[in-house]
Image 1 (cartoon, rainbow, N blue to C red):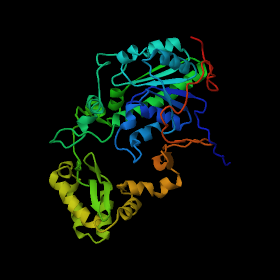
Image 2: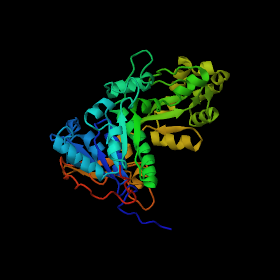
Image 3: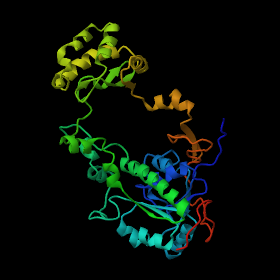
Image 4: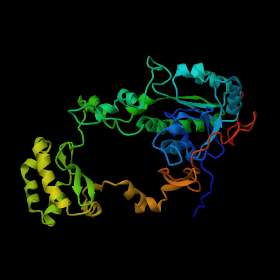
Length: 401
């Protein structure tokens, strides 16, 4: 059976009021991609994120364009009495509210989740905040850097003999956005079945701590504290290796154990790399030798003699065909032209200030449904406030407060 895609998304008819800062803006983008009507509420001068560099020639922030694609913009300052009433009317028409400040700041704006859900019993309030709504750190100021540190991710990034290294971009807002959007969908499902909203309390620190790979399990099960290992391989056969047109990542060992080791030897010797025969010596089966600096550098010399005369695509296809875990390191140009991503229409052209910019689409598809950004970022004040008493989205009967 062939399903005909529609322009509607799975969240068609859901209205989301987005009062977030840059910390929570990605959550609204994800919900918009699913078809929700996301209304970004901005002060008269616009959200400060509109001015973040880098920008297009027309002055549009690239990061703002990415997080706000598909949203609408409403000018309303919650600190102004008249606009506060306007905001209350807007919440009457919505199924979800997004905020991203600590409990103290929210209470000062009369937007603390306890107060909001008392006034709007049929509203899901997704409260994204640096440290959550409770606890001794609840009202501490925070930045991307301090949240990476507080969540533990900074302790795993960088060279072991240098200071920790911050990942580029506001990674904590992306991590929190994915977690918050997932929780929001669960709360929305509950709203659909019960008619009553609830508070989703999302701590960015906890979201980051949830993203530490297996660091917690290492400590719990083995008593080992994972530390920074830098860009170099932890053991022979594993890591980044240079080739004719870039780099490949090879996994030839894990946890001190050789993986497909004999296949790697056969691969290299079959292509005329005679030195690869030395990799069959007994010492390459020993964890200590494989994890030594000498063992790693010896393997690198042998493998790169082979790899430097071949492209990353050749290495990928040849290695994978032998059951060896090897992958090309894709550049942005590689990704744009990747036949798999092109076939699935992953990248989308979006109009941004009259220019066509290519955006990543969502990594999921729904049968008979459209997902992904439908438009670029909104112009400031692109819509007026909905009238008080406007109907809620279909399937979301509101329960009176």
